Structures are given as C-alpha cells and as structure tokens.
Amino acid sequence: MKKTALLHAELSGLIARLGHGDLLVIGDAGLPIPEGPQRIDLAVTANVPRFMEVVAAVLQEMQVEGAVVAEELSGRNPAVEQALRVSLGDAPITRIPHESFKALSAKARAIVRTGEFSPYANVILRAGVVF
Image (cartoon, rainbow, N blue to C red; front, side, top):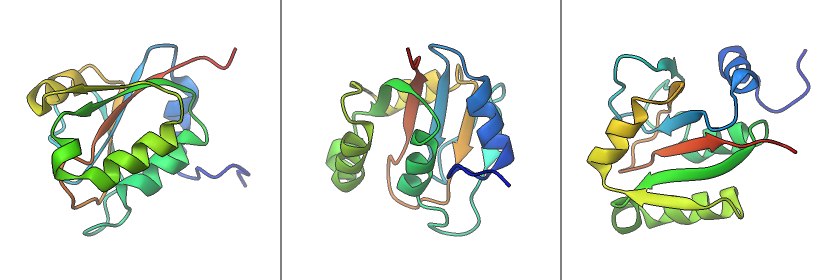
C-alpha cells in the first residue's frame, strides 16, 4: 500500500508525470472543465471533498513554483484565499480575472474537480522542480 498521503491513484500518477511549468487546476464543483485537459472528478456530494483538503494532499506530493487564482477570490471567498496563501508558503500567487482563469485552465494537463460549494475556490498550480 502507498505510504504517502495522496492515495488517489490517478491523481498521484498525474503528479508523478508533471514536468517543470506544467499546470494543474484544482477547482470547486462549479468550475467548467473544457475539452482537452484530463478530468479527475473527486466530487462526491456538496463539500465532499473540500477544496483545501485536496490542495493540502496535492501539495504533499507536488513541487509548486507558483499559482494563479481569480481576482474575485479575495472579495468573495477571503477564507479560502488566506488558506491558499498559508498552504503555498513562498510560492507567488498571480491574480487574473475569472474569465481569464477559465481560459488558462484549458492549457492545464488536468483539472481536478472537488465537491467545494463556495465561490471562486479554484487554483492553477504551476509545477516546479525540487533541485
């Protein structure tokens, strides 16, 4: 049995295949998922699993050099914004309009759908390197 925190085989395998600069989106239950990126749907029911639970598990396995969020996050969901800031540590966070966020998500390797039912709980993580 796998020893690290992230047990979801498809998500863990995807992270193992990411290269420097690749994008991974973690989104709320309502984020549209365009054709192209791999879809990893974790949503079970409202708020299961929570956005920050999935972010925390992913960050245990993924080296992140930067993140992108929607500008609207700070005004509509400051608790999630603060939790992301803490979880990402020194990684810079870029803020762009939500429509631009959705367009950029189409360039991601994958989009992970959570059960989160709060507004703008979405992040694009840019893979870094561990050396």
